[in-house]
Structures are given as structure tokens and as C-alpha cells.
Image 1: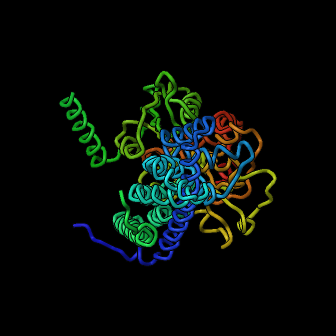
Image 2: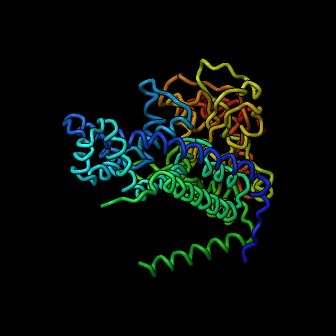
Image 3: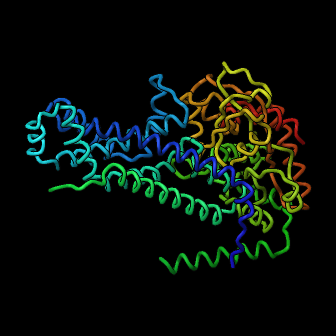
Length: 222
Length: 265
């Protein structure tokens, strides 16, 4: 019978909490920046400008059809060759933003395309400015329509961020690996890590639920 | 196929058990001399010390040392591939006469086998860009240094590094080396083996900053094989003196036999 010994984990709980904190910060920043990239990408794709659409298509297809591990290696180990060198944490953030931006672009594009042309024409008929139309008639209902897929992509992003330990960013997974290397209490450490990631995901998901109620909880007449 | 493998495993296991349980067989120099062949056990999965060349023959630092030993003794060298766990049982059961198998000299092992003077060594040190001026652990303050997570160099660097050192831990040697070569870190904690590979790839971009620890390796014989051990020691002494070991070391590790090996006894 396996003897559980959580002492090494509790002794170094600070290490794990610091790691979790970086995971949370990385995820939040990547979500925020990724949302901006996604909206810009989606608007660009639906803008009708051919060159822009082709460019965004290339970005989306390249990112969605290559492994995240390779993308992060490319950014951290490849880019210094052309003089672009950054810290592991910055490289991790950049890789996450680029990655989630590609998936988000497609999700939000489908949201924008779900808005009936008639609604935009109705906006025009009401005398709304193009900016007002974009804000109230297009993007808000579009985000509302794709909110569940977008937020699950964001939670997936948080879980994916565990890969950044390969470039020595000190996230939660990395902290766990370091602790494991020191104590060899693998079962206990990864059990605690599993629970921590689960709680983080649950926390994000609860927060997304609250955001939805604040911003998107209005009756939609369709 | 399955049956064959099972049979093989059984035989191998029994052989190993016999080897472990049976009385230690001291190698008799006269017997070896009359056979005219010295049987040398070496690893073939530990490059650059022991490896297999493209046609599957044992090669590497240990192979060259083994051949030099055979020449010194005036005998043919028969290389017997062994593995890390079975190398000492092979020696103690008399299946090989000597081990040139990258066997690190430790007190624990010295109770089971007799070691010659060191013929090789692995050292852990801090290496880095020529431009970085670090000559002791205190100089690591404020520097980023790459190590392989949970490796000897990880514990070595972690033990001496001051508070302000950014130790960046990577999952394997290759990734840590990548971080150094791409310029993401200026320093790395690495073994002389890894460093030889880096130097081979990059020329003289990096140099050694300071040593962390070292481990010397000896040629091993079964206990009680004193006549043989004397011969082996005479060989190691002469090969160290006349530059034979330097030459072999240069060939496989890109530098002459390190001083810590020559001075260790």
C-alpha cells in the first residue's frame, strides 16, 4: 500500500502558490490581449478587404495547424537568431496571445457572421453611426452568441499555459516539476497540482459566468 | 519469438543471479596471458565514452582505452558490451577480465571491485559566454543560468548560487543548451561531455567559468586480481604520461584529459 506523504508539498506550498499566481497572471493577460487580437482578426476577416482576409487566414491556419510546443520553442529559441530576445515569461505570454488569438479570431468571426444583415441595416435606418453600429449591433451580440465557446477556449488557454514550463517560465506546472525533482513525491505533487488547476479553471469559469450576467444578460429578440 | 525472448530473459536472469550469488572469481594474469586475449567489458550506451559505430561495433573513449590496454598487455582485446546494472556482476563472475566501463569510483563500489588509478572523469562546471566575467559562485548574482531540471548540475548550481541568481530549469540537456546557444542565457551549468559537444558546434564562443564538482572513473578488476591490477595501473600511468589518454580524450571530448583526473589517485 502506497504511503501518502504530503509533507514535502506543504513545506513548499509557497513555491506552488507563486507558480499558480504566474499561471493566473499569464492567463489573464493572454486572455485580455488575445481578445483584442481575436476581435481585430475577426473584424479584418469580415471586412471584405481581400488582402487583409488572406493575411489573417494565413495567421489563423498556421497557428491552428501547428503544435503550441513548437510555437513557443520558435518564439523563445528561434527569434533570438534575428535579434528578438525576451524573458521566458514574456515569450510565454506572447506565444499564448498569438495562439489564443488565432482560435479566438475564428470563434468571433462566426459570431459576427451570425448577425443578420437586416439588423445592421436597421441600425443604419435608425441613424446610428458606423461605430455605434459596430459596438451595439455587431460586436456585442456577436460576443454574446459565441460566449460559451470563447470562454471555454480561454479556460483551455489557461490549461495550455502549463506547457510554458519547457522554456523555464516559472508557472504552476514548472513549480510542480521543480518540487518533484527535489522530493520525488510525484503522486502527491501531481495530485495537488491537478486540484489546483481544477480550482483555477473553476474560478475562471465562475468569473466568466458573472461577466456574462453583467454584460450579456439582456433579452434577445430573434 | 515470445518464447525465445522469455527463454533468453530466464537465462539472462539466472546468469545474473549466478554471477551475483557465486563466489567472486579473481582474474589470474597468467590465465589471461596464456589465452592471449583480454576480455574487456564496456558500455555501449553512454556516448561519447561508450557507443556503437555505424556498423554496430563498440566505439568511443572506453573502446579506444580498452584497445590501448590490450596493446600495452601485448594481447588481443575482446570487447564485451555490458550495461550499467550488469557490469559489476559480469566482472565478478569472470565473464570479463576488466571493466573499462565508465565506472565512477565510489566507496560503495570499491568494496566490491578493485579500481585502478583514474583513466577518465566527468566534471560539472559553470560555462558561459567569453564576455561574461564570472569566476566564482558569488558572481552568479543577477545572472541567468540554464540547467537541466533535477540533474547533478541543477543541484550543484542551486547549492552555491546566491539569492539573486535566476536559475532557469529546462527539461533536458538539449533544451538547456538551446537556451545558451540562442543567447537567452549567458551561462549554463553543464558537464564536460555536454560542453565538448557545445564547443564542437560553436567553436570558441564559450569558456569555463568555475568548477562545481567532479567524478573520476577507474578501470575495475575483480578483487584479488592483484597482478592484473598492477599491470592495469602501470598502463594507466604510462598512458597518462605519454599522452595516449590525452589523445583519446581530445578525439572524443575535444580537450586533453582534464587535470582533475590526472591528479586524483
